[in-house]
Image (cartoon, rainbow, N blue to C red; front, side, top):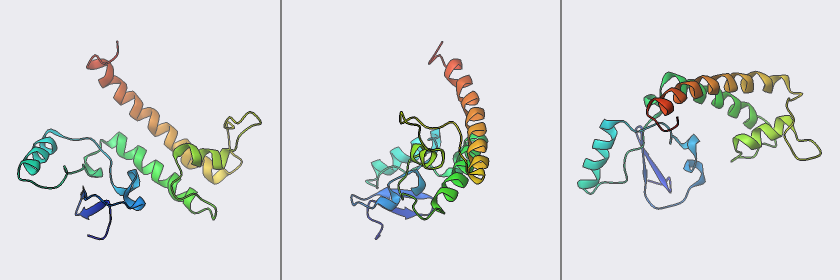
Length: 145
């Protein structure tokens, strides 16, 4: 125990009612999509009176999703190497930090930080690739026509 809201057991995270901001985000290991086996395991666990359902580990991500995660992690690491980084900064906050805003409050299109440009460009490319894969399924399953 001792982790407050999330207790880590191997690749599983279980909610146990407390609060701990260090595990209260995607960085705490909550990512991925549930598989049929995961759904069945969750149902069995709850029937036995177990903890909250098992959260899917990163290993279950598609190759495209994993590449987005890895690229985002590199950007996150670089941002958090800055002395004035905000611990719980959102993707928007990170972009605003490096790109700045114009007089109207909108994000500037580019950053003067060459070190930032590499991971953000990589992340954007990988997000487009993942978006294309997701779009195939969205249209294929008829969510959008």
